[in-house]
Length: 616
Image (cartoon, rainbow, N blue to C red):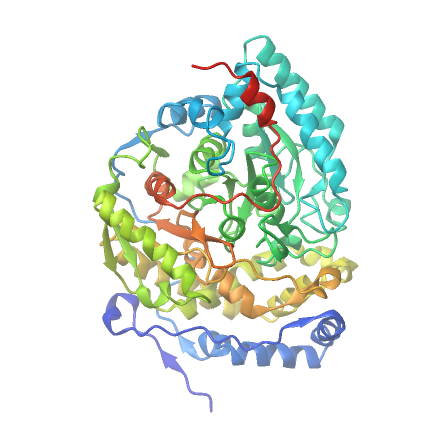
């Protein structure tokens, strides 16, 4: 007979007695022929189920879902209790136009000083051009959106973007980019730019609809069965602000991976180290921003897919509260863990893009009752006035469970600076049942993904998927209705634990990932790979924000001994994006100097601008 355990209700658990358990992933790392053979075996009628059952048993999933009584009721999507108001913020209306929200966001930023960008000593440390730098250059007639567009088009042409190993983009139309840039240039010539985003180049992940492009989700076939009739809601908001939509960014196929590997279009390489992954699944979105080709990009985040590549590529990635952005017109529409969020080279650019795209769907407004969106007051370069009162929750055993002490040390250094410079309190916390959270997340996202794609797979498309996606789907197909309900019971249980934690702290801080950018095995470029150990390292800290719907951000805080970027994750209470953004701004100010990526393109042509710019 099988033994079973009965969990105490979450409210009765004494978390002070909880011991941290390190992950011990038991699964093969396979590439090449052996990987292809493994997938064939997984999909075989009898042996496949035996392999999957063994994987689940060896990694604790059978015990959690089949041998455990969970007393909580299921929670099928995040449900949030009422939240207290944030401090030192500006409230904006969801019904305001994106342009009006952008104007409000601009007023929350420090006064713009062009000399910090354009008159800086060329020998000084590297910095990315910001959205306000482009806007200033356009208004001052130092360059035009059309001139910048030609620079970008030329670079992408040299990339041969549809061939490995340089595919930032899956879909790109130079004539469409020129048309948008010419319209923007004309508006500047007439003195009537629409907003600060007018003429700003933004790339859209390939699971978000953006005309005239198809949406493939990183596959070779989805566009044949799913047509795009109009922009997604978030893209339409960006377009209304004058943003120039560059194209569709590469991604891990269907978002089913964290490395960014894509054997269909070539795997996007990390701009800091060409032989390493970008992280995923929003791989192209992160890499194209980190390489300087555009100011911002949109990604989707269902399991760290904005924050992981942002961390590995040394940029900023924001995951909003579940329901804060409208998912209509994306492949993630209808999911219970996903959001659309911005990736940008700076905190202020992430804030500006967030200001443009935020706004819940009518259904989410009714069901989730979101608090009004807020922006932090960043009127000085130190993150705002409310930072000093924040309590930062840190689970030390979890925080330090990383592949290299470089990661935890750099993140710890920032926490010490926040305490020293701003007076923040770092509070020791315990986050119970992290293993159960990982299991509940994979069952939740896997079941929803499989549900949305089963009709296509039944119609014969399964064989057209990449081998690593087929591996994921073979595991997802083993989940039962009972497993799914148990995962949603765990979701409610974990929500109770976290809301108790948030009674004593304002945010939870961790490294974003437990490793820096992993090396791409050469054999993985053609047919992908399965490496659950790397997946565990990359996803270790990100899952609560997805399963429970909390806002979170990854902000760069330095580099490891190999020069690879490290990110700090800040996760806040439901709807507390302003708190997360405000603290991230303080972190950005305290972080070490930004290193220029090995692959970087200065599309503003700064030599000419430095020559032409009048002194103030």
